[in-house]
Image 1 (spheres, chains in turn red, orange):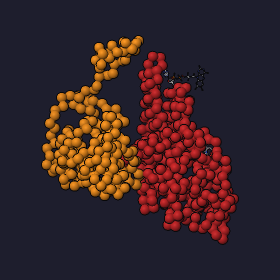
Image 2 (cartoon, each protein chain N blue to C red):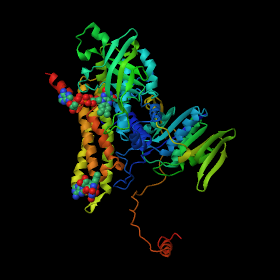
Image 3 (cartoon, rainbow over the protein chains, first blue to last red):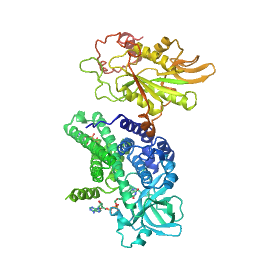
Image 4 (spheres, chains in turn blue, cyan):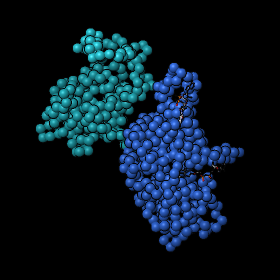
Amino acid sequence: MDFELNEQQQAVFDMAVGFGQDAIAPHAASWEEEGTIPRAFLVQAGELGLAGMVVDPEAGGSGLTRLEASLAIEGLAMACPSVSAFISIHNMVAWMIDRFGDQALKDRYLADLCSFQKVASYCLTEPGSGSDAAAMKTRADVTNEGFALSGSKSFISGGGYSDLYVVMARDGEVLASNADTPAAKAVSAFLMDDGSDGLSFGAPEKKMGWRAQPTAQVQMDGVKIAKGQRLGEAGRGFVYAMMGLDGGRINIAAAALGAAQTALNKAVEYAGERRAFGQSLDQFQSVQFKLADMETQLQASRIFLRQAAWKLDQRASDATAHCAMVKRFVTDSAFEVANQALQIHGGYGYLEDYGLEKIVRDLRVHQILEGTNEIMRLIVARHLLDRG
Amino acid sequence: MKALVCVKRVIDYNVKVRVKSDETGVELNNVKMAMNPFDEIAVEQAIRMKEAGAVSEIVVVSIGPKQAQETIRTGLAMGADRGIHVEHDGELEPLAIAKMLKALVEKEEPGIVFCGKQAIDGDNNQTPQMLSALLGWPQGTFASGVELNDAGALITREVDGGLEDIQINMPAVLSVDLRLNEPRYASLPNIMKAKKKPIDGTTPADLGVDPAPRLTTLKVTEPPARAAGVKVASVAELVAKLRDEAKVI
Ligand SMILES: Cc1cc2nc3c(=O)[nH]c(=O)nc-3n(C[C@H](O)[C@H](O)[C@H](O)COP(=O)(O)OP(=O)(O)OC[C@H]3O[C@@H](n4cnc5c(N)ncnc54)[C@H](O)[C@@H]3O)c2cc1C
Ligand SMILES: Cc1cc2nc3c(=O)[nH]c(=O)nc-3n(C[C@H](O)[C@H](O)[C@H](O)COP(=O)(O)OP(=O)(O)OC[C@H]3O[C@@H](n4cnc5c(N)ncnc54)[C@H](O)[C@@H]3O)c2cc1C
């Protein structure tokens, strides 16, 4: 068993770290203040192949494995987890279209998505249903031309900013053939373009973290969707959405890991410089032990994360459970490490200039979205107990 | 025109270099290695000239241990076409490297050879000059500007006093300086493609060169720790110290 990154994996990681430090880090604070990520930056990221990482090269993607893509997200997040996670969500949608879309949809969207000429959002959560996503109310009524989408999606990353929205909704066609279809099996995924009639957005949410990326409610009032804009098979939308999240969770964990590593690096450096009681902080055993625990948490996270990504690449039967375990374990560990790194900075950790409080604020939501960490336990327990 | 670009695997510039405890050299075990930064600039220059249509093929060459292939791969991911790896473990001196490069130039017949102005490990700044002398080709060292023209190439050189323009005939050996360009990041698709690009292997013996060092390293030690500074009370005291203690004036 070889735990080293191979040459190519190392090259992917190094590129993402370098590009992140050059193109994101100097702007992370101002993008957060402005509440938006400049399109020009995304196009630059697209030129480096960061917008369609796991999409087939034939369709304009980079053809990376999940493991390699997670390395890129980890590397970018060392500069800013919010920007890195935004890129991850876009990649998730691009993958869904590549994996489940027919040729017409791929031709229509993938080239633009893979170059970041177009930005995509993922719309599952609703005001009344988050963890219990299958209880969604948004519906796609059958019309002569195709469908009409009605309902609201909440907390949508990129809401009002993106060009394309993949919307999970109850499919009228499925329900017409069997009104008693179980909720999850009545859902299809639809591709909705920005600018459609009947599409509107809520005000940008004011958030604790992830402020660089806009989050808003997506409101649909009879938005017309052509028949061909339904992604893949009718009634499979929920499955597609969950499959998207397997990879998404790996990346949400990877982004948390990269940011927590930056926090630890800062803490080590600070503990060597800051003096109290006649010596540098890193001479106190209690600080040393804290640093040792942080390092151990991140090393354990890294190896666990990469194993889960590898399982997803292998399409292992326990991949979903591993993605859930990793999402829970890594995002909890990363938050704890970031919080301790802030603590080691004393009062300075609480100030914006030192960059720690932003990491703590940003990483908090990694424990909540793409399935809360409680829901991750639910998935793991189900997997464990189902074995019988 | 074919371009040959010479790249060296060195300790990453971010790494704090440590001397081995037995004082035979610097610690390379478990140390992050990377392409010499000046060589990245050389690769970038060749790629830009290829994009501009002035260069038709880019061959990257590295001489060193097996892992030097990773450095070649980095060049291929940036956009070079193929690689040549001269495998050799152990110490190499600039003259032996220049002789091997000469043999490769005779075989490959490039119209231009790019090197970094120096490698950040040994900081020798000798190989390109030696190569140019062995080939009998013109050299343009410390280049911060390269412009091909009908008569050959106009090279802007970074010299102590500022910039110097020289017109040289081609083919030539160029050594590139920091301000020539800003190397690009390899894109993900290009990183993926790089593993499929060919790297030919050869050895010093195949090239007819004896790589044995001519110098003996007695010992490698850390530089002395910097002593604490002193504050001076007056200009007169400063001048006195510079003259009598530092002996610089
Ligand atoms: C900044 C941000 C960006 C987001 N981006 C997107 C996006 O782009 N697209 C998208 O679709 N969604 C997005 N979300 C939504 C996110 O996925 C949901 O917030 C999340 O799934 C939780 O849903 P909820 O907020 O409705 O909480 P609830 O589901 O109401 O949960 C509240 C609490 O109850 C717990 N709970 C619920 N059910 C159980 C149970 N069975 N057992 C034990 N505990 C339970 C939860 O763990 C949680 O602690 C985003 C959210 C945020 C904050
Ligand atoms: C919002 C805010 C408001 C404030 N308001 C006031 C105010 O009104 N008046 C005022 O006087 N001060 C105020 N402070 C300062 C605050 O009291 C200090 O920040 C706090 O005492 C910590 O000191 P420090 O920041 O210098 O951290 P440091 O003393 O440098 O400590 C850094 C880290 O090292 C640890 N550490 C230090 N010594 C040891 C040791 N011997 N063993 C183990 N660990 C150790 C600390 O626990 C901490 O984790 C404020 C701070 C903030 C952030």
